[in-house]
Amino acid sequence: MSRTVPPRGRYLVFGAPRLPEEAIQAAVEVLRSGWLGTGPRVAAFEEEFARYIGTPFAVAVGSCTAALHLALRLAGVGPGDEVITTPMTFAATANVIVHVGARPVFADVDPLTGNLDPEAAEAAITPRTRAIIVVHYAGRPCEMDAFTDLCRRHGLFLIEDAAHALEASYKGRKVGALGDAAAFSFYPTKSLTTGEGGMLTTASGEWAERARVLRLHGLSRDAWRRYRDEEFPDYEVLEPGYKYNMTDIQAAIGLAQMPYLEAWLGRRERLWHLYNDGLKNLEGISLPPEDRRIVHARHLYTIRVNRRQAPFSRDELIRLLHQAGIGTGIHYKALHLHRFYREAFGYRPGMFPNAERISEETLSLPLTAHMDESDVLYVIDTLHRLWAKGRL
Ligand SMILES: Cc1ncc(COP(=O)(O)O)c(C=O)c1O
Image (cartoon, rainbow, N blue to C red; front, side, top):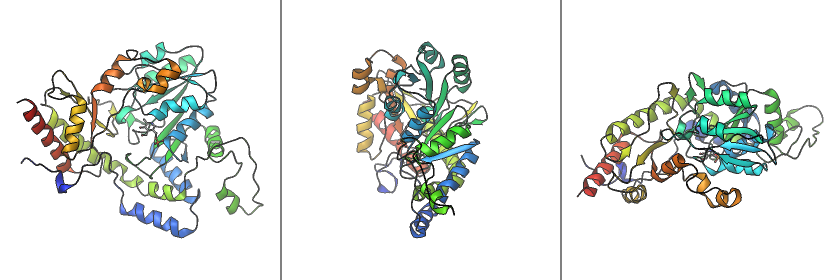
């Protein structure tokens, strides 16, 4: 049956979060508890998160951007250094490289997966390279065996931007435990959200300890430890740190979502396959490839719109879907094409053809555990109606 309005007559917001009632109650309890800052809920969230990822340490921070910045500081990256990363990412991944005074060196991506290509990354290594930041694009783990080997051979730090990939694993090992450090995001569109928030994971006790100091002004003891300890609540500034701590309000909201992660992933997986089945015959659309070696976190359902075969360009399609009450996203306009990166580092169109092609063709359709089958069927139905009209 053809529909002309989204199910239940509402706009299908891109990335609408799903918050269980327990998360709302947990936030209320913290608000009533008298301790709103970084405290016992943050510690509990970190413990549960580390257990879920299978990594010794998790340090909660205010955003994934903060976690990425801290990872670079922990790796000792600074002025004069280079960090290789992908142009197929959100600005934060490369901005933090600039924040520590280093140079972001982009390398091209795999034309099908959109993940950083290990061979292109290797070709970009110079004597100044200190680290590689891989981004598990859309929730699909990068080729981590190749990157681990590459970083070992060249003495580089390997940092995972796991903003899209909380539930992902690579050959049986969870993303977030595959490099020297990893950064997760709890931004509202992510599968677990704390409004804003992030997590740094690492197997290094030394890095975790320094991250805890750096996330709160460089203080030797945070407020929770100062007030809880029986001894005199003294502290010292060990180094000029940042204001990157997570609050107990955020942590309580996050912790309450942890038991749902796998069920929500299962739901997104079902919706993903529904999209695949419904869209496979649309001319000019290519669907995300499947890979049995990995668990895909199913964060972004990205299709590619081939202008020569499809009746519409990607940008026309965004407008038409919006008119039909469907919000979409672009992930991403390749980062080297943005003004700052062109002007500051001399990047130009044509340098990373695979990323540029994805950048022009990619479109993310709505996919979250907040949605149900009728939402996805509406999107599929709308696309078929548009294709039928566009062909006239
Ligand atoms: C790949 C990637 N890295 C980093 C970030 C930054 O995350 P946050 O907003 O939590 O700082 C995002 C945010 O959407 C992202 O998609």
